[in-house]
Length: 329
Image (cartoon, rainbow, N blue to C red; front, side):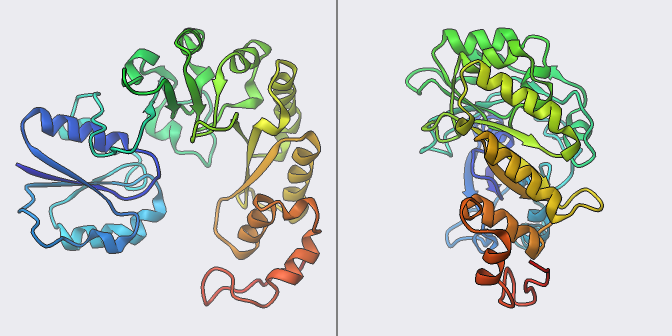
């Protein structure tokens, strides 16, 4: 059997596709993975075999609009899945039960990637995790996730609520005892961070997803959470994490009635603390994308918002030909 796997978005290896590769190779099937972030890469290639099975996996909902029809046009019987396709989709629904991940199709990838837990304690209205994964439950130990020798002791954890699992202390001890570098890639919930958990984070080699920079990721989704968020950030600093090592994703453009002043308050508060603000637009409007760029590129540290808008974007095309910046500075 000839099997084609389509990696449709995302920069890290796709766990679902790696599980599919393991499942089919265990049965002696021929498997090929193709990255198709650009829809033009979906077209069949000269010399392709007759594909007996085609799978496509997408993480983001926007990928569905750009890729789904083309996948079905080129491969009418393709099976599509992933959160971007259907929150309820799962490999188990197609009889794929193996949890082993075959990294063969990502030869340049050196880290080990996986989940020590699934689900979340919270039910945030903008987040699909509770609908997709349900309540918090344990998934894998660190030994389960690590690929073993000769691969480096570098972990990318995709956990959505690492400290929600009852046995997080065991996972921390496994990371510490094994000398692993770890990226809490999806972030930690600083609003619910205890001193014990903050000390645990400070005790391990936390890194960004490139394993080069000391980095903790968290989020400030709602201005109402300011007190709880900064209590968690202060706990991290108290136990040895430097403010500049904390990146805080700021959800913008989601809450009804949100103003530029609301967004700017969170940005300024985080800059004052010394953390790195990173705005995340819920919708891609010119104003929100402009704010994101102003902050990420650090123009906000020396150019007032109004001056930056007037000098950069006023009356000029922004994202697409039909979009110009139509907001007041």
